[in-house]
Length: 464
Ligand code: GLY
Ligand code: MN
Ligand code: MN
Image 1 (tube, rainbow, N blue to C red):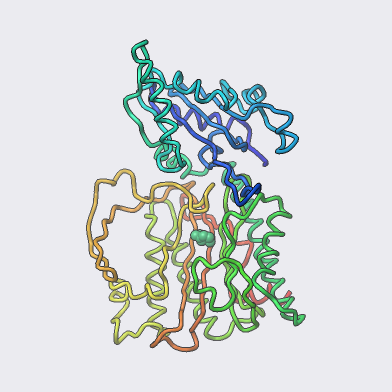
Image 2: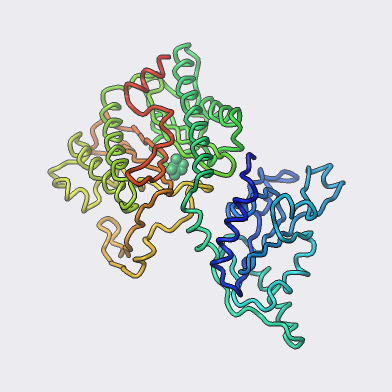
């Protein structure tokens, strides 16, 4: 990885330490290794919180951070035999200097040292409900400490969720993080361009095209440009498959005359990108495809215009819904006689038949990144309403106010399954357009536009 200097991580730990309170202590585990099947593991990916605070990519490691700002790392010890099989280990001796930490020990000493580190602390912070068996490990250390109270040990009185503090820090992306995210976006955009052009070229050459051909092209470009892995399982959906929201690249045939929806992004140095493009397999939109595509694009433009510091997180979604709902009435997807006008379609959530997801999410180290979607200063303000479709009571809290440095996706879509009353020419068309945006003072910076979105631009690209 092209890691930022240890200073970046030290600054984050210092900022976190200041929030733990002087008698606080935080425990952060690395991600567990996971077996895929006998003798074969899933590719290891470090836990986002752990990586955010250390830049350290090895498994079987723990960070312990005190309110005074002292960090102790527990990591795999040097072991020549294991390193011959599994690769280089940094080891605790080199770790302090290289990672800029105060102290490091072998992870084999974790159970022996943790009770002592917890002694005299008031609050133990750790990420709740994220790591299987973490709570019982902590219970074990606290139990050991409690057994020593007769000898003067002092047990912590409180356990608190570390996620809240770290989520809030991770929600704002600073200089070098934005730079990595721009680079990740450029790589992903380039991969989309390659996949679109490959599709058109193969069909021109009368070669059979399957979804996996395009998936392979994306993966090839991601890795060729130095990204470590896809940020999530790529969706490559030909024709009607695009109406399945979580479809994965499979073996579906890509046919001239149909649309292809690709939702794919790489992860670079710990940060995700997330792009969706929908394009005609042979490079030319049909009339109905174009009508729906331009509607989704117009709804995305409305959402982009609503994405700026001071707006609420929900504003882009509301702007999208307004445009899509009007378009659904205009194109006859929704019958105005049955559903009424725009306001009725929105209030009754009739558009949900064709647009059933939100218009975006935070983006960062995780593709659906952490960070509260509720405005922290207004958490107490709760209102209740009845959902018009499910009849459930929904509790609304004021949505997050956008600030510079937040990064989110803007991804409207339309998914038209064959159904009675739906004009035939739109059946089985699924479209989504997704870009990644950094919130700025005056608006937002779209970092994924190296792959075009306009009808003419896409058609021109696919003719090349
Ligand atoms: N690729 C996941 C998403 O768009 O949210
Ligand atoms: Mn997304
Ligand atoms: Mn996506």
